[in-house]
Length: 216
Image (cartoon, rainbow, N blue to C red; front, side):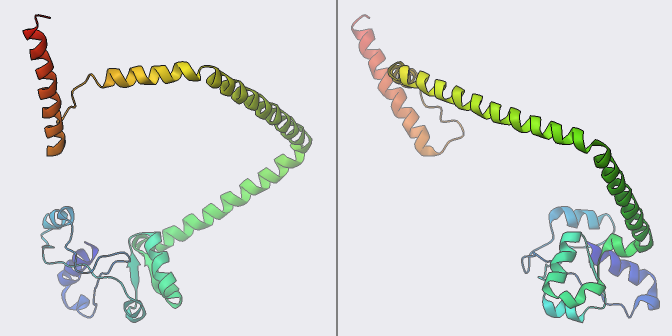
């Protein structure tokens, strides 16, 4: 979409944009793939036809030849630079290049805030070191006690399972017999499931008929 939009912008400014060549390629593209229907539809609203677009996989040669490379995401940017490390000074995300001054201001502010956080953290730890160390020791002691309790509970549960083993086996048998009373539901299933369901129905109906005959 970016390629189509930028080509249109260059065409709109006429001679001034005639020396600029635009090409798109993907870092994980499948060669020759069509644009998604959503992309085609979005560009149609801009008066652009993407129906003939076919994807290309980016190559090292393309990266080396380009004067400027704009990516949609930072992950794409990192992928390009990993392919050709020497290209790092000409690879930017689209927004990074478009709003470069603003981003530099954000990065500076980000650094200032991180520095303030580190300073406050250092001062806080200095004031509360003794208290923090005591709490950490208490936490470790409680954790050890909890681990011991968990182990005791685990052992008790294991003992209970052993003592009720026979009863649970009987329950499983009964549950299986109860489940077996249901006819297999074939809805939304393959044909062989429908055949299985039909066989179950037929078999059960034969038993019903026999009981009716015997007056049960």
